View (cartoon, rainbow, N blue to C red):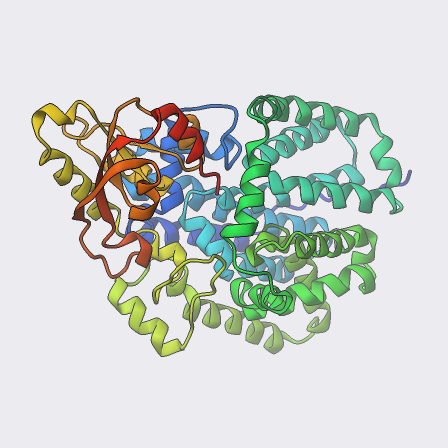
Length: 508
């Protein structure tokens, strides 16, 4: 097999500066609103570390556990790993561009595309699985290129480690690896898959993933049940045109143009045709997501590949046209700045609402829930303190003899996790919930519940007495279904609590 010489170019200084700017931008703004719903949940999962959870692998709960411990209650510090992931993604995108033959301006354009992408800006502002997924996928792409250019044991070991970590960060990585392997298998680099280095990488990644796979088997694959329920009850009905338009809006219109050019460049641009298998990977992954009726943002982690190819192709078009290059960079930065307040908490919330109305942009809806004027990733950072205060007040108003016999039941993991994090441990006991992994953490065999959230009709199926005793205060910025939620006192179960617990399991 013939390989190209290893490209030893360093990351340009402009990319380093761009990465540092992205990190500074996040650090200056990340603490301005509040904890995101899933961040609260990851903290709760991190306090109960395991090799798996109903709705995610163990990587992010592990990161959240460390970050929550080190941040000591500082939201800004808690989100530093996500902020760093966005900054490092810019570095890796620039490095990948150089490996594929880009000059400095092309690498910089690819880095700017990652910087201004609304998807990546949101990912960098919230500590979730999505913050690390594009980082892992881009690293895998780089390692594949390095293996093509100069196979080595250290690269193969690194590929195995990164692939294993990527899978235990988010299962959807498998839907990237499968098209990647298939595309390599039918390319001129097919012999790469027969190298002993690849076998080493597969063994290492399998060792990393195996404990999580065992956890899934031991718990009857709860992720499959959750995906089935989510598709049927939670997500909006799939619409192909909305899926495609979501790529334009969530990825930034200019970035969408760059990525579209990049896709064609992998097949038509002479230097990039050496790596045309990457273009096939995107096509296969795209139609796989369409088949699975995925949300638009599921494509996000593969876009740095297309940004790189598109930027290289753009540079060929404007090779001797400095004015054209400067115009493109200027347009990207200006348009990116216009959309910036919609992605990260840079504006006071009232001004953000006014700004959004001025732009005439409505948040895209991906779930069957009631929305307000704000995007869900922002709305879900509000309302939690009001819920915890209402639950604490309602519990403190109970007769002393009843408190020891009352469990705090939350209708979803967001409410449960908020109570877990913000409660006064001396005044309010730890909550239970039947939602996702809280179900596996079990119930308290108590005959009276203080039920936070949910519907009265639901509780009446299982308890003889249901009485609403309080409501959380209104928060106009929170998701409507998490503002002014009812708190019930439910008594006299119609069946033993362990029996009721099995019936109310909610993987969704």
